[in-house]
Length: 370
Image 1 (tube, rainbow, N blue to C red):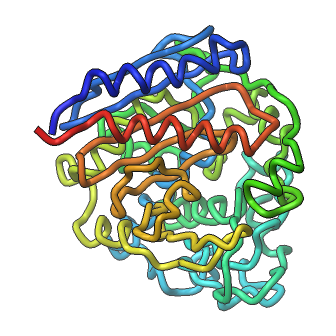
Image 2: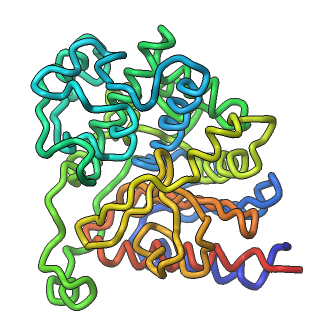
């Protein structure tokens, strides 16, 4: 496998066009292969060293840390969360397992957590006690945008006696040659790109033609919630479901480390688990979600583009995107990993979905058989 320079040119041109057109203020991409960053580009008012909000692209590092701790005997992944976090089982939640939480099957997708509690662990634990389920745990799938990974973060903190930010960095980021992504020192010598809304609302007639739906479902991932991460206090709170900040190169490098199990980053059984589909209920579009406890897998059913991958991804490709078009994946078939970030939060989710598929498709074509 080697780098196809013509395909790289197509990738870079596609990513650049939305910045040059004035739609996106800035964007970054990175492609890695054989353990090295082979393409790194920055467009608009950023540099390759600028950090972007990853949003949900940070989730795999949190889940893998929990899996590693479970494999080390710190807790049982199939046991109730309440066995680790006393009080969580209140209001009928006693049977919810850690595994169900990781698979977005816990039944509390919209459980509220005030931003004031993000940096206050006792307040978080009290919030968990008050939470109720919206549907029977383990019976379905609904994306838990932030609630599930807050619970995982506090499981990590409980069994280690340390802040989840530090445990994740030491176990899953630093060994991969990556910087910390959570709760960055506001006095640090780095730039975090502020996010801004861009674009127009989706054309509902086009939405109906393309996806067969009249509107996107309501979610807590609103434009107001996403731009709130521009506030230093929220950046410092180490939100494990969406508060990461990284460069595209760092995320592509991390996926290389996971792909090749660099320096024994993961126990073999943990890596196998992370690549094993355990949740395949349909999402709101009726597409099976094809999730492990950590990643989304592309799958072989021809619907990988609905799961955040481009055309040309192998069925074994794995990754996890983030709100408003943040991309992160690796493909065992080619040995490539790829990341793309932007700080332009497109109001048109249909357009940004097409952009993400287009960019990922071009990235997947950059590595060719010799």
